[in-house]
Length: 345
Image 1 (tube, one colour):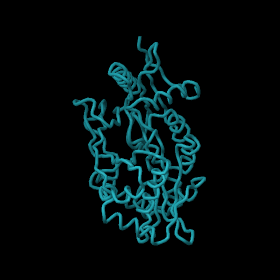
Image 2 (cartoon, rainbow, N blue to C red):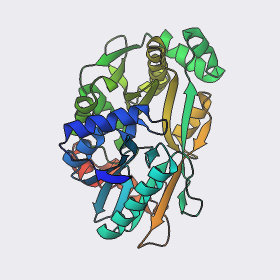
Image 3 (cartoon, rainbow, N blue to C red):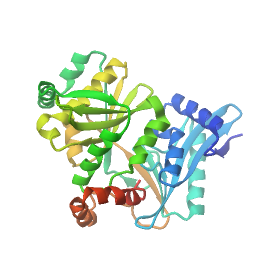
């Protein structure tokens, strides 16, 4: 008989079983890992509901959820805040449907305005859809030179420019150089930065499955950095930041090439360039690298609203806030940012 259980926040044995299932389940992603529960609770203080479906033979499906209670944006139940992929990962339809049913019951009990499932594939044609986002994934070839030649000519020239400029890439032991570049970068774009301790928590929680690569000039000046995740045979560059000098030095292109080189050397098979909003600069950048977009299907169940929420920088009503944030001193922005960003997810 199928039963729905909840992963206890401090149940290490159950978390180990959960992660073993995630590693083996074809539908699962890095964002289904049990460690996200600790991060969401301890860094952002969100209430979490990591549900799994189990029978006598073992776990058959998992669904990580978090309750985001925001004064600014209302209440939601999301799988999963701060993740590009989410929703149910299950071995069969029975387990998937049971977990989704439990999530809907939970959403009603919590009184949220909506339930959001960040699916890669469409699951419910009748659920309202957020179709703003796409993801970019591409095979990593086993030969380094083949990977270089697979980059379209214009971007390949930028990579070679970075090499000619003597740029160097190293794996950092911590997040200091990364955070300085990341915080400056998001401030220039008018968006709040995640808290610094969140990035350290990512490295602490996921150990060898997360690292920071930083690009420096020949003089040792950090100009570009990226925090990446590793899952099965995939690399996922996820958070990044650049100095303004990186543009002229081709630091951004060099950074991703260095990451691809290292992934190739490790025998990884997939480079997941991550999520972008359609019509943005990051979307165009990834297309120019030869990656093709794949739509993401963020499905919603609406309870106390009439339409899918648009809590993102593309929404015209946030443009004044974005312009104001850009003018704010970065020290103040870094102090206020975590108070806002926890409500976004």
